[in-house]
Length: 385
Picture 1 (cartoon, one colour):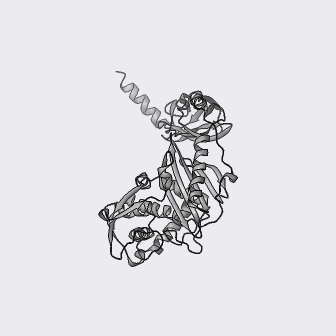
Picture 2 (tube, rainbow, N blue to C red):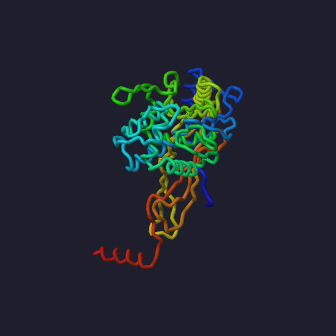
Picture 3 (tube, rainbow, N blue to C red):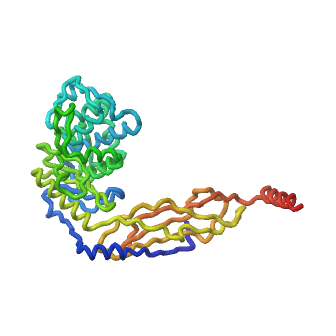
């Protein structure tokens, strides 16, 4: 589209900058050398923007972080009505045979879907994860096929799942970037945070106590989840999620030598993100909500509207302004349908585009034609007395 008119509006963030200066906050930039992990990613959840990466596409096992994808499919099944939280799940002999971390399910034992999710998230129970997979898809094999299908749809090009719980298996691999992608997808299901935020709980009417494997829940401000994983091949891994002042971050750390190292690395990544970035919700400039001249229409003008503008990710210390630019033509030609895109609203920061929203027609405008004009003239004459 050839835009004949461009309008720029400066949005002042001086208040935010003043607050940052008052608090003495400074940007803490993490480097690759600061991390013991061979692979890591820091991602902003709402935009998916990568804020830091270290060998982010290195192919590695991720242990029980695999369960993030398992939980995505379970939550989708619940959302669709195919599964419900109070539905009873019966453990098969296959589910009960899982080793590693588990809740010692017996073949034929039943638990609600909610308790199985709790066991999978909090205790990282391999047997519960398989029981849920079988409840969703009938068999673990079919569930794993769906896991890989979902991974492909999310753009997880480095990932191949061979099981639903993350036990070491030849060819069961992913990357830090892919883990961030699926973690972001899981966060779209708000209810999952009710589980990932649990520190201690119980199952089987209090007979089984479970403690979360994510120790950051007890030590990091704003932590919300998400999942840990440890095996001999994968090392110590974590995808850690935290939220402060509207900024939600995902820190992925794979392949650490110890559990303490993974928590330390995740903390460094999150600290760097919260110190270096902020979310800002701009107002929509008046120039985006205007009236344009219409050529060859039954009316000579049309209003414009734009959808809700979401929060924008801004880097701290990169100046005190963000700029909104409205691109609209001087006039448009009928016919026009309500919702037709006729312009765009672009936000820039530090000279780079950070968001774009369509500007659309607020109503229909029919193209002028002889029969319509004749009808209007006839109506006018008939009503003149």
